[in-house]
Image (cartoon, rainbow, N blue to C red):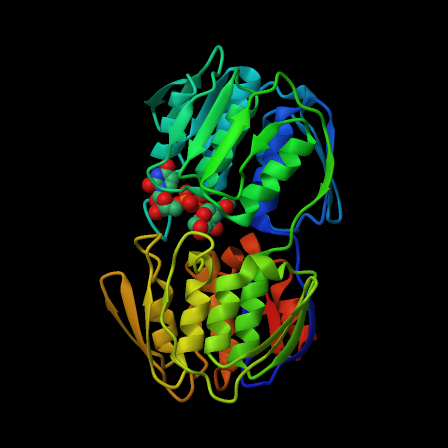
Length: 416
Ligand code: UD1
């Protein structure tokens, strides 16, 4: 199994190009199921999770062709309504095929995703919304069995603004008869990006990016060509690397507008940040100042940046409180960062981080995607050698992370 070895303590400097967003690519690739023609997507990141969704789409009868970062999908042959356990368990976002399968084939048999390291992650809101749209749903033998002779527009209220839930329901409602409203919808930029793509395909969706989305159902949709938006979590991870190492980065091909809360916190930490079109120039502070964060839905501070920010706070001057409000078990990275010398205590859903002068390199184990990134960051700033094991999590969501850090001057390598 691959691992990453880092000799920490270098001041990093240079330019880094941000890849397409995983969390936009996954639902957008799935949305090609809504049309029978060929959709062409550019700037698709080369990631394990993207490969998982491509494999699932092929299993369902669509044709998928990849050439570098361009992916062509033709769902004309969509004929299989079954998403098997073996594929769904590898990636929870596979649940996204449920809405489009119902819209196109009127039936779906999709494995229940189950929990994961960071929380139970139920999908009750996806199912409730589909029921509101007229689907009948049963849970049998670990599978969701759903049917809908005709999906009908409805007013759907989400108890929590679930991201993939909103995406699933947007897809189902796009081909339903009549008008639907998704209230308390997720507002993440990936939702807006997906709605833009779907509107280009002929859907009629208004208000995506706000908490109320109106969808006028259409009878059919057409293929389209689009470029995937930049990954705001990857960009934020590099911003934290600059702040951590006293570095000086130009982060290019990113979308600063999507990073408001992260930019605000990193300025408070002492970083100097200049923003221009698609570019963030960040210079890390001489002394890192402790700042509190609480994860929130967009535009609040993203839960997907919490572990990385905690590493930054672990060498800050002062004490910071980091509260996780989205997932109930997203502190598993703490025990590993503590093995590198961090001083962190957990109280309920908050972590109290007392800054220490330095971290020291150690062998550590990645437990989930963003936790893996936080351990790489810790390794970059720690004294001596850090070995990050189980990095398949990292490959799920970061394209060529170690190569990008190498170009910024890090002493980092991947070994088998
Ligand atoms: C998406 C992102 C993930 C990010 C998360 C929160 C993708 C592919 N993944 O995951 O990177 O960390 O948003 O920003 O876009 N919930 C329910 N019932 C449901 C659905 C969700 O209770 O039916 C709860 C979850 O348990 C969790 C919270 O809502 O506590 C947020 O989950 P959700 O927004 O659905 O996350 P994902 O869409 O799975």
